[in-house]
Length: 355
Image (cartoon, rainbow, N blue to C red; front, side, top):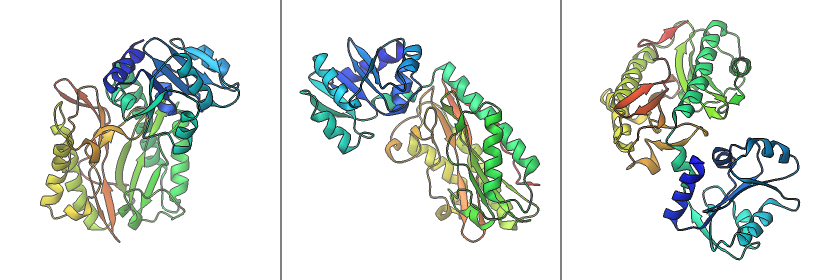
């Protein structure tokens, strides 16, 4: 009941007496339902998981703290009628997720006032329980084993796509249900692309490789990046690796409850900016992970003035990207604890690995 209790408390703060959830991640998080294309209605006294005939038996076996109801003529019309049945007057919806078409469908099927909510369940998800951290750690362990596999098997002549495909299937063999996102394998000049998803480029001797990957284990995700070289790369790569490693370690050391997103970003930039590479590090220095690959809190945009808190699990990912030469990124997963932090991933080597 803990999750429903937290959701109801958040609803009261946002002034709604019912909440309609349609984001599959939030529906699953609150109700323990593993399917998709379903919804959850919560009031202060009732809760119902609404699904269709494909998932009804699964839902009955998984959902124990809400009624399980089946619709036959459309999810949103059914949910609209349901909030009316519950007597709700102000119904919150996920404004950052629901499309206008879905909003309009819901509006036409309820007498209640629809109220935008933002980050209601997502904010609850930011604080991980010990059980959740354990699942994230398992996802990290699988990903790290995958990295060791890559180091043993990668060689010149392979394509980036072949490396990514092999890694993905290897992790599935270790218990991953899926990958956290499309695996990034960027080699040579392509490593200067921060999100250079694997393509058919052939890996050559002397290429630097940026590998950004993650595994999903029982719904929880890991997110890691390592940079290494096949043979001897451009000497500039060895140089910038040291600055990125320094930034990565300084950022990790600064992580403790109360530190603002903008302070994390400034810390990540300190060593890189001092070395003259300020203009070659343009992305956020980290983000939360959990049920989703990018969730709060973080070191960018909406979280600029937001402190990290005990129970957050966040990434630490500075980088330098030199067009035409290559790039370096080092990314770790960090748990924020009551008195500081705990690194959940194995620390990258201080020197660029040449294999």
